[in-house]
Image (cartoon, rainbow, N blue to C red; front, side, top):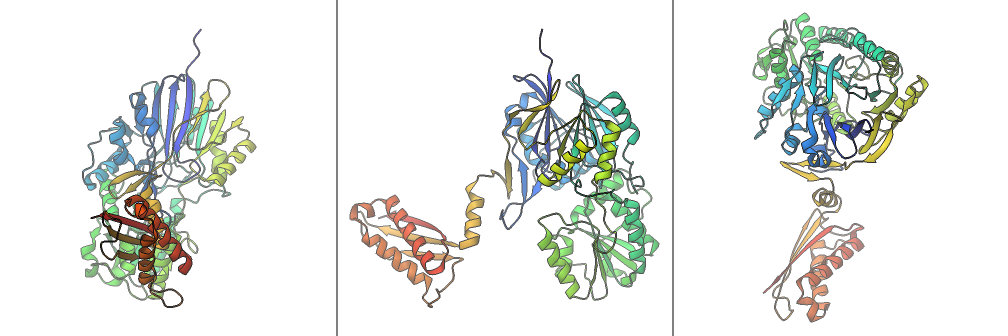
Length: 556
């Protein structure tokens, strides 16, 4: 008698971190499985630790190798940390992509804005719809979040049903879109849920996430009370927040001016898909200066301190159309993503120094999270009664707290995992049964590089201690044909005694080369390595740092 197929789950991104989400479900035996990917997102580079890296993506070596068994990618929603890697990585996979209408439209707009984007066909599935993808029947269940058309996925198989929550919260009064579908989640619980793969982002926070309706009320009060110009910055994808700002502006008799390409793109898609029906038309940034200060509101990109985004340019008085003056007001209707605190703080401090009032969620309810707090996590467990819960979408602390909560709530089995773990969900006892290749890819300009690439490590070294370039010309007799060429980049001009580093390095290069046996001088590699070591050592002696040193030897 043949063994029944196993249902497996493997996170390749999004576990132990927030961002870069990629989950892989498998159905079959250890030799061959049908595979279904859920989401394919990015994380954002940190200039301090990853200089020059804009985006970080999951390593998809495993999926490339198993491409013939990969049946599709299903998107839970259209946030960058869930779909931002598709344009770059899809050509390596070339499998069908499934999404609901808004996500598909926003993805299409993103492709149109990207130079040389591949043609990626997307199959549009209606909200609450179901689609058969090989042996997987995938059901899209509406959940509240901070972007239209977020969906939990009920993945129905012969082994059992898995509920992959995606990003979600419980918001009984969303200002846009459907609330989380409690009735359908309870029905799934009644029918039996094998495993709940759940969002852990706010698992350390007690209570419930406030509603978007409360933010809308606060926004209306702030805009109504403002005397001068108002600028609001928020995540461009938060259409409910855009609508709340527009309603607040209309009530205060202000025109809304859109500032920033990402915001323009989302507004266009939201209008095309009906999410801004009945909302007044917005103006382009060209119209900003035509309105009196108390009759205009600028809706800006740049809530995360991005240096090229609209708000940073406005704060630096570097925007061609939009300016702010003393007495004007800037509302940060967003949270600062960990890692962006310095950049956001610099903008806030710059605005305050100019006499501009800054409002953040520290003092007013101008932002709410799109993720569930602890009472909401308890609710979904009570509704669905899963046999197994696996926390995902969170750092180690979030995953641990979610797991503790699930055990306390009576979930029979709770498993924590890491990126790359291959987990058997059923039949039988669940557990880790293997490990898949996992890791990170860096988007470096237009190039995708492995995280072990030397380029980023070398940039970090150069950023810390500079670089010295040395060029030597040596005759076939092993003698210096001319004076060495020495160039110092990022090195102090003088040491503590006032001696020039140029001279110190030059003298070291000459004395090292001339002190070597003639045979080693005629060996370009041996000569280059000796000079490199000597230069780094002498600079460290005088400075306390070892710079990079590149030596080029030319035989003449």
